[in-house]
Amino acid sequence: MRFLRISGAVVLLLLPTLAQAVGIGFAVRPGYRATVTQLKNGNYQVATHGSSAAIAYWCGIGDFAIRTLRLPTNQRIYVAKAYDKQTRTVQFSLTPPEGGDTSKSYSISVSRVGENMSASGAQSHCFDNIMDFDF
Image (cartoon, rainbow, N blue to C red; front, side, top):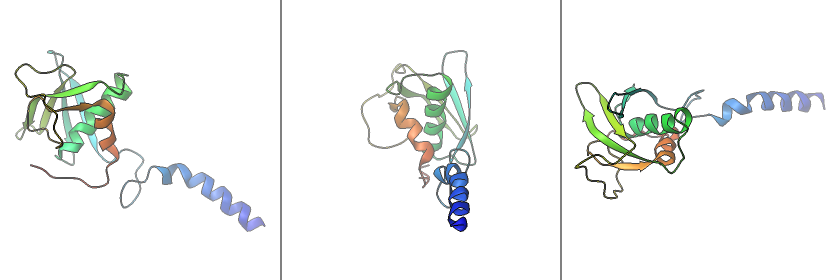
């Protein structure tokens, strides 16, 4: 009986860590790390650390929009300036970019100005287990 109590206590203590498991291994943070900087023109520049996969950029801006800016989850986020290989950054906007193609797309890309998704859709990529290197 004592063994069961101790085992139960250990499981309860480890449960929060296990709930945040990402892929193989465990993480305390989302699977991707990004730095978001607000620019003077109202856009947000996202730089990722450790990955240049499109989902890492969407994760960064989606998480920032919901947690920091406290925007509604259905807020649309648009690629304002496509991926720049030299700086490894993408610029996003909360309004449709002028001249951008905002038609619906089923691909996850940061290579086309106007590409867009909801804030919750973008944030959901923070917990993807497989990175898709689409560059």
